[in-house]
Length: 170
Image 1 (cartoon, rainbow, N blue to C red):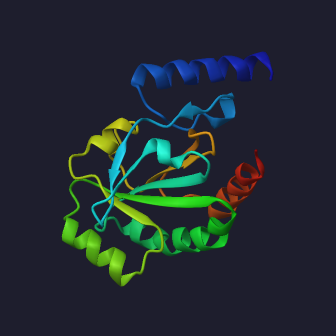
Image 2: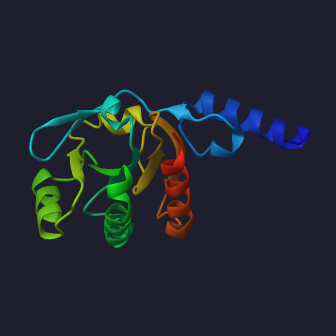
C-alpha cells in the first residue's frame, strides 16, 4: 500500500472511529466485528450476532415504506436463493418505525425465504452504527466481521463476487 493510500486509510479509520460508525472501511484492511445484538424474528424467536458466525450473512436494514428497499428485495431474495445452499444467509431487519403488521404482511405476501426481524426499539439499528437511512446493508463474514456496508441498493454483481470470495474462505 502506498504511503498516500495508507494515510488516507488512517484518516478514514480515525474519522469513522470518531463518528462511531461502521461504514465501508473494507479497503483499509481489517474488518470490524459485528456488534452484539439480539434480533427478534417475526415468529417471536430470537437470533443473536453470535448466531451469524460460520456463515456469510447479509444483514439488511429496510422498511416497507422505503421505495428502494422494496425495489431491491427481489434481488436480495434471488441472491439468497443462489447462495444459501453454500453457507450464505440473509437477515432482513425492519426499522423501528415500520408497523409490525406491515412487515408481517410484506414478508408473507412476498414469501420472503429468509429470516425477518423487527427492531421495535431501534436498539439494533443503533448498535449497527446508528442506521437511519434505508436500505443499509452489511455483509458479515464467517468470523462475524463486517466486511462491507452499503447505503442504498448494492451493486449486486459486485456483491455476488464478494459473497463468492467470502464463501471460499475457511
